[in-house]
Each structure stands twice: as C-alpha cells, then as structure tokens.
Length: 110
Image (cartoon, rainbow, N blue to C red; front, side):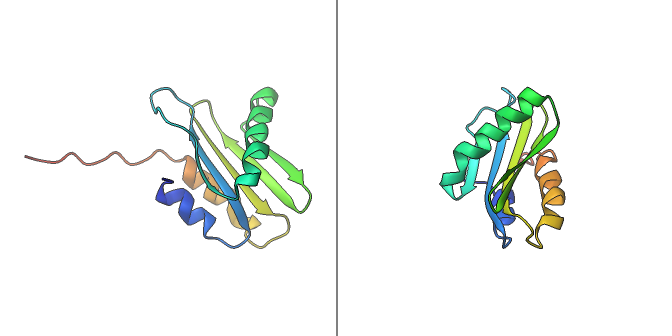
C-alpha cells in the first residue's frame, strides 16, 4: 500500500504517477508506486539514467509528459506529469517534500 505522501501528490491534477523508493538497505522494501502502471518502466529507466549521469536529478521528456527523477543514494522520487500543466510549478516542491526524512514513529509507553 502506498504511503499517504505519494497518494497526496497523485491527487494533483496533471500528475500521472509517482515513485517513492528507499534504495538504502536500512529501509528494506520495494519501491512504492501509485498511478498509471504503464509509466513504471519508463520511470525506472529514468532512475538508471540518473545513476549513469551521476546527477541528483534528471528530467526526461516523453511526448506530452515529463518524468522528473530526483534523490540521492538512499532515496529516489520520480514523478510523471503533463508538460505545460499548471501543476509543473509545484512538482519540484512536492518532490522535495517526498525526499524529506520520514518522521520517526512515537514509541508507545507501557
């Protein structure tokens, strides 16, 4: 099940899909994906391109859409959005929010 952060990002009109992936072995788990599954292989190739280019982020243009992949060696976020859509102005800010460390869970007192 996708976390609420990426579900909130996907609710914005103009965003097609979102990837949230902790690549650090300390955060074991598969990539979290919400949105149109047809974009998954393209986003994963953009993740590889970011690694090959050794850049913190890459943008790939595919027809009327853009794929933005950003992150570091521990956490990668990818967003597919419609080019020229008003949401584009907010996409970078949303990606930064997703890359922020998760708040630690409060411990239950006994």
